[in-house]
Image 1 (cartoon, rainbow, N blue to C red):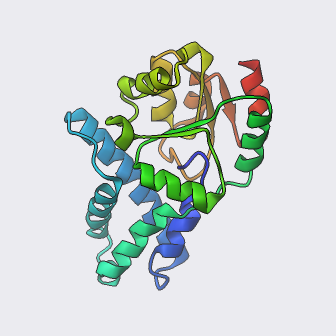
Image 2: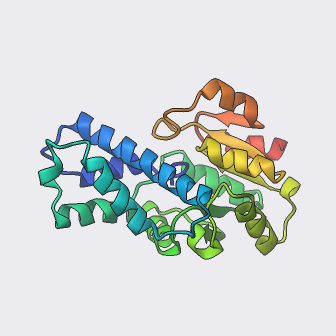
Length: 222
């Protein structure tokens, strides 16, 4: 989601507009971070994949405890609106041209993301992006960055790790892909990995990009 989509813009539009934009931005960034932490906790505890709607609702409720001045604004309808917003996000402007260039060069492009298949279908509709296949944690039965998640996708599309490139805006994701032998391209999005050291990430990946403008060029090099 963060790699291809500007989830931040979509989320702050859904949050109660009486809250200042800067605070809505802060809430959105923390909510997203808490969602990742919740997934990581489930992996560490050996718990099964949870529907993203449930995870988002649970993490939002926990987050609102830290925003006592605004908690009253989030009635049931407001919460449902906030969660529904994750199903409709715009693409970053550099993504569609990059995908079309990759397709023109004959590359197969797959989404491999935590979440549900319904979420992925809805996001493809709202963003106008298209892929050859969508793989969700719901479909695979495991969250990234567990190694078995990547290995199962590779098995299903019948390719070897060294024949693939994972493109992501998340350090945990590229690290998981590296662990199973995939090449990696990190795309820096200001909305994601807000607590990561970008200098460290630059040294961990085959390429580090500020956007997808030259994505086809670096993948051809790999």
